[in-house]
Every structure is written in C-alpha cells, then in structure tokens.
Length: 243
Image (cartoon, rainbow, N blue to C red; front, side, top):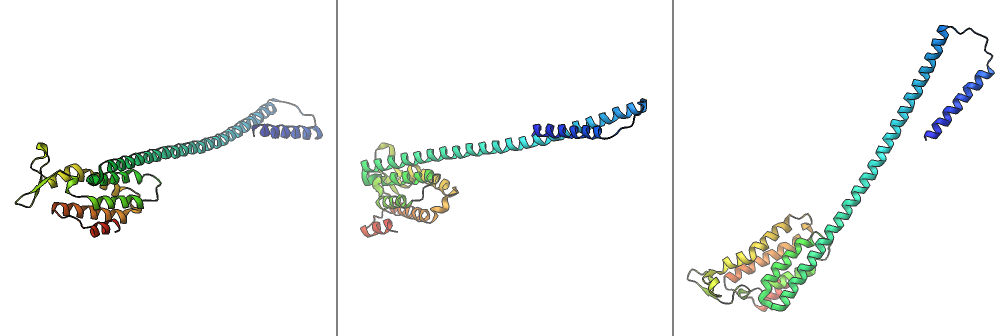
C-alpha cells in the first residue's frame, strides 16, 4: 500500500512538471517576496504531505491493531475450547473410575453393600453432569436396584430395639449402643446429601431432575422404613426397581 502511495505521488509530480514544460512562462524577476512565497509554498506542500503520510500511518496502524485483536481473540477462544475439552476428559475419567470402583465393590460384597453402592453411584452423578452424557437411564436403574436391596444389615452386623423404639446397633465395642439413625447419618447420609446439593445446583440438573427427585424420595422412604424395622416384600422391591 505504501508503494502505491509513492507511485501516485511520483506520477502527480511528473504531471505537474509536464504542465510547466508545456506552459509558456514569461521571464520574471526573482525578488525577496517571490523567494519567500516560493519557500512558503514548498513548506506548505511538505507539511501537507507529511500530515497525509501520518494520517495514512495512523489508519494502517489502526488496521494492524484491529487485526492483532482478532488474532488474539481467536487464540483466546481456542485456549478456552482446549481447556474445556481437557476438563471434560477429566470428568469422564473420574466418572469411569467411580463407576468401576462401585461396581467392583458391589460385586465383591453383594447385597450387604447396597447402601455403599447407592452412595457411590449418587457421587458418580457429580462428575456425569459435567460430561456430554445423554444416557442416564442405566445409572438410575442401578440406584433403584440398590435402594430395593438396602436393609439394616448394610449398616451393622446386629441390632437391638430399645424401649423408646430407637434401634441401637451392636457390632463390636466401638459401635456398642450407637443408634442406627446416627450411624446412617454419619457414615452415609452426610456424603449423600452433600452430593445431592452439588447435583441440584448444577446447570445441567434439569436433564435428570424428574428421575433424580424420584430416586431420592425412594431412598429417604427406604431409610425411614429401615429405622422402623420394615422389610420389603418381593413385589415392593419390584415396584421400586420399575418405578
């Protein structure tokens, strides 16, 4: 662009010179006034050209700044995109690890670890909501299955019912005369309800809201039944799993 500007200026000077050569100029006397006028004219033209050049540079600089800003914005966006993908991969890996750990533990310990399995899969949802997962159905089926299998044996080896209808576990000296409700709250519900708060506050919670509300109602109801020493019948378990 600068090259074009100088080319145009050269052509303009050449045309002016040509005009002077074709124009018959009568002899004139160069005095101080003519000299000063001529110098002033050249200074004016020089200043005009200099100002024009500075304006041109300012316009070009503004274009360069605008271009660099666009490049910077694109680079920043790419960085954010890559960071988001890395974060998502971390959540996917954490989700997979939590699922495998829960399933392996349940496989090894069977129905007596249903409460722990429920706590584990509930925690999985914290990571799942940060991924692009669309299929949650099988996770909720697992949660319902674990709820249907939860009984007092998930929490202690033996228990006694007190006169005030409270249940006290008797599973060694460490837990002797400890209320079952206290044990459940300390070892299970504290973590479960903390995860529930995180899950409900997540921006993607709307995707699972209906099923999650149902699962948490079933869980709370089942814990209440256990504290009332109620065992589930096969048809009641079936109803929970297929609700």
